[in-house]
Length: 255
Image: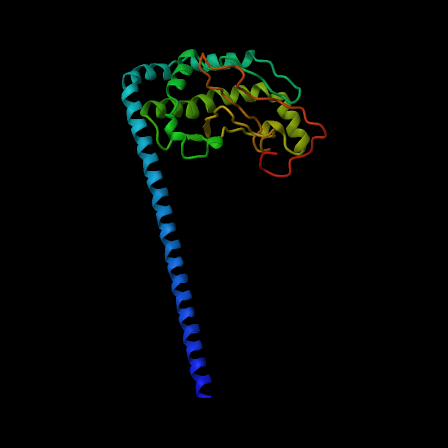
């Protein structure tokens, strides 16, 4: 009996010893995992800091490059002929009804203002906060060169709401009234007030692809201004689709 007790005691000690080793191993693994998470967090923080430093450097560099152009920009933005030019360009365009009401408007902005817009495009580094296929900046900018801030604030605060929106609404008045009457019979079309949403600059690189879709229903009219340079290829653009067995959108998201 004593021999059995001693053997059982040694076996219990081994079990306790192995159990303690397993606990230590588990504790070490947990500590290693915590250290890996901390290292991962540090790497992400360092990557963010490097990106911010790159963005600030790009803004300061662009500010220095465009400092001498601010006086010319002031003259361009004060041009009293901008509203007339935009109205005439939109008036000349043809509204097509198939596959839906749309128009292609050439030279919608005066050359001087358009050149300033291109010059005022924010540095590419500022788009780097988003994945490659979703890179965009909302106007007015949170961070951008002074030149970019001024010219794009003029576009979203003056040119779009005061010059473009009234002319576009008038251009599409007939199909829009038909659509309003069809969807909201009790609402008289003249009572509907239209307002432009915040502008966005979308950076689209080679290989960008988005599935065919219909924009949200709250967006009565979608306006896309292509910021093309003279040497850019004309194959870039938007494809229009006719949809077989089309159906009503199920919600507010693009359908």
